[in-house]
Length: 288
Ligand code: NAP
View 1 (tube, helix red, strand yellow):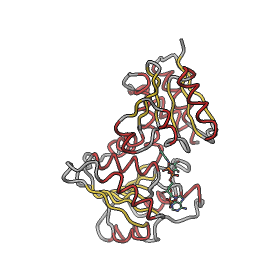
View 2: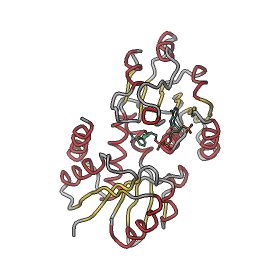
View 3: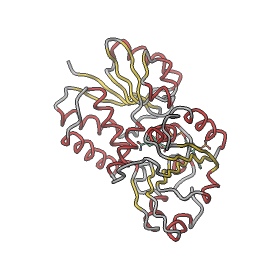
């Protein structure tokens, strides 16, 4: 019998996930279909009860449900528990199991761009929302020195309080927080833009003081700049980073590798090169 998967979000209509996951199933010869589940927060309980009853075999979970969905899980992986967000659900033997692949996708995007080790690397994350939280978790796991800078300091502080106790044994990692305006105090090896600024304030907005990246270049620092936003693919920050001769990583890479990890969670199969390439092509098409 064909399996059924979906993207649970609201609004979910713009999602690229159906194209990406359906391409993966086809390339892998998996008899499954993946659809959009546009579910309002007030309808979440009914939807999750239907899922538990077998309506879906697995879900990708996106905004605004990543935290709320936790209440419906029978089991949650340690990473999702620590991050306090679920972006992947699988139905196994009638039980709903939640996990998080956002941090996996972010780390994989960094590794594929040539970052061999994150141990001791200085990383600044802009933002303290769900995505920043998952990325900070992954970086701490890899023993990086992480600074989370956010527009709202309280949220950055909460993130730091929640995550800093987790990896006490990781001698070389650390986590600090601050306000985005304080960016001038930092010279990161890696800068990760994880706010939704381009959606909330438009692409005319500036997340960094002008000249910050070129200033770093004058100091001999050439940071790797990743923006996790994938629409537009080359964000204003990435334009500025390219101008300042930084290496850049576009947000579609994190999206791709978090989806690859979801495919593996649901099917129990390793995503082959053919499958990953099919997902990449579908993503590229969707972003045109
Ligand atoms: P979220 O939980 O809603 O958090 C939003 C973050 O953006 C908060 O830190 C917020 O700061 C900040 N922010 C919003 N507007 C801002 C502005 N005008 N100036 C400065 N900061 C601003 O969202 P999220 O789930 O973390 O997602 C963040 C972005 O990442 C979204 O655009 C999402 O599409 C993208 N994303 C991409 C991937 C991927 O795979 N590539 C995965 C997940 C998310 P305050 O706390 O001050 O409000």
